[in-house]
Image (cartoon, rainbow, N blue to C red):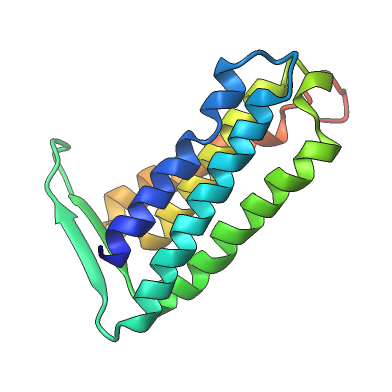
Length: 162
């Protein structure tokens, strides 16, 4: 298994990690706990991919044409990108663990789902920004990251200060 496939798998798991928080009842902690487990699994998968990337001297790349009129789906994993991916995989996982005690979804049923969904999407988009090798893919990942960060940061929209 290559470092590219491991890291792309980690990005998908991170981006989809908020689905249990959205789909399961907000009156129980099961959705939030499943979200945290997926976030940790995605982060662990990404860290294994980083280990593979740091163990190879040549960069790993993936180029796939797509139906957009410009660019292609192009990602590259090299040692420098692997170093920057480390915090992207570690910090969101630790933040989701911290959220189990700080931001219990049961106590925030009206906006806890939104935070869970966009927090995972933010983590996945940040990782995609780091590995993108095509300008169009980079811009798509950047905008997705910005939108997810906005909705995650404004999850507590009932507070006037937010």
